[in-house]
Image 1: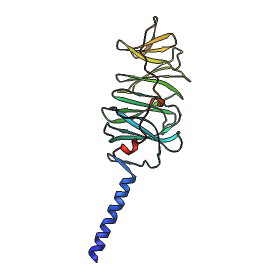
Image 2: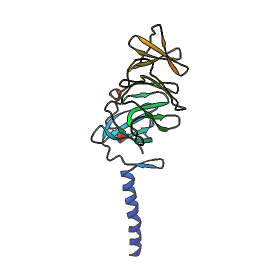
Image 3: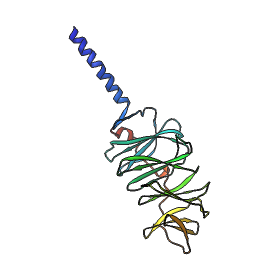
Image 4: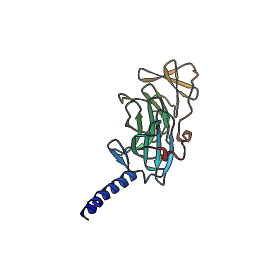
Length: 230
């Protein structure tokens, strides 16, 4: 009889532990609960960098961003409070940049930056209520703004140094590369990024622009959550 009681007392904690693991998804030493995040908003799959953004009942507010590899194994995550229904993104070979989210410590807005090589997530505080046309070349992130100056901005993702240009009126400018140089275009005006500043160029150039990256261009399978491995 005592043996049965010992077995029972041994089994119950195991069952409780298994239920806890089932309800909580583990990655590394961190634990997070996804039960409250029921809606798949956007994401990517089948790439080197893959992510899915999960929301609660409303699109705005606290969201859960999960990063996973091509085998659907979860490798990192972050909770971020979305403050805008429009969220630009840019995906390069080494970076995924998402914006805009609320800075929990100081208020205002921030960008969420995921680096593939180091599997790390950082945040970059921004001063604008609206940003547009994210673009990454090498380790530099470029973006334009619409509702506030400066309109042309660059951030070194390695050093976190920032460069802002408010000398020219070019809201929502687009970015492209020619001969290893990054250009910005607003209507028929062009600017080149040299020596960490933007300079106007007199001639017109033909840039190969990528489509503005926004979540409308992101599509993932509806059964993605069933594929993830924690």
